[in-house]
Amino acid sequence: MSHDMSSRIAGFNVSVFRVPLPAPWVSAAHAITHHEHILVTLTLENGLSGAGWSSTMGNAGIAIAALAQSYLGPMLIGQDVHDHEALWQALWKRSHQPGPGGIAALAVAGFDLALWDLRGKLAELPVRRLIGSAADSLEVYASAVNLHLSEAALVEQTRAFLDAGNRLFKIKVGRPDLEDDLSRIAAVRKVIGSRPLMLDANQRFKPGDALRRVTAYARFDPVWMEEPLAPSDVDGHARLAAVSPTPIALGEEVSTRSSFWRYVSSGAVHYLQPNVLKVGGISEWLKIAHLGNCANLTIAPHGALEASIIVAGAIPGCYPVENIEGGSFLEQGIAQVAAKPERGRVILSEAPGLGVEFDRAALADHAASPGDHVPLPDPAAYYAGK
Image (cartoon, rainbow, N blue to C red; front, side, top):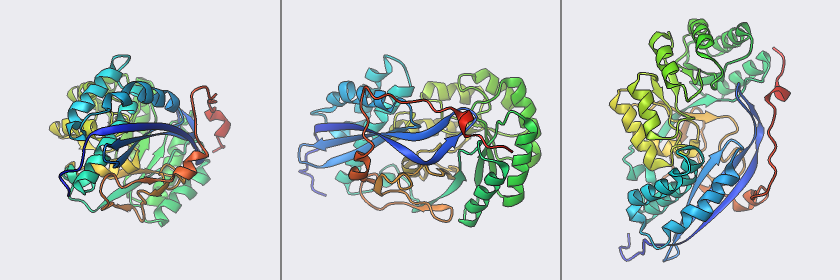
């Protein structure tokens, strides 16, 4: 490596794209037809550039890009990429003031990933090596946002995942009729046998119904019950976790370390699921994962496949990474080089940096900007019968 390389930031670029999913995602909470990707490029004085990203399930991406462009990016000009932690704190402080987490954390995440990409390229190492991962490949679990599918279609999808070499599975629950849920879980169990099965309710239930449901689901021996309650209800999760026959998993809607600490310290969660993008990037995800490790919890990265595989190998006992059908950059047709799970595993990149090369030409067709009107899909429009 050349030590006379400049490591000062000379410029940045932020752009946002609204990319249609191969097929809609429908859960108990949402109908999702697009992902919005906020791409951040940082360029050093010597011309070297690094790319980071943040993503949403079709909501607020334009607002995140505006925050990043007007308020956060200018703070980095003239700064040294090796002052990464101090830069993260400065970005967080400025975006945190109007409201912690959420849009603010997603805006910081793009810059955090771009800084890591540059540091990896300067060191001529993949970022996973910089943070201490020894893994060359990781197991993934087959996940899908599939509550709208008929039971027959759900079985067909699950069988396809199994035939493709997956060993672990996650399905959505939260149909209005509990018997409908039980029938669907039983049908999936029949396909996968005793292989690990996770259930995800996407915050569907109130505490009483959650207890009734999780007790009924327990006969199918799920690994976890994910997001049974609203993510703001820490006390409700703590009471449920104390009596639930099935472990509780959550974290995808939690953005700050203080919120994660409340869950961990109150015994409200068994599987901690921070999302790399929603907590403000790799730097903060690692802190939250270690926080969970201190309580002897299993860390299970939520979504964000291309970012999650970078961090997962550095965390002891990390659960396999979530691979959501239709959610990867390659499946969305927006990357030339990115994670490609095959037969339930993903081979990790040896390229310096984050190991993702976006297809800028493909993305250009989906450019979004302030002033765009973004409709809200209705989940009910996608539901099939039993």
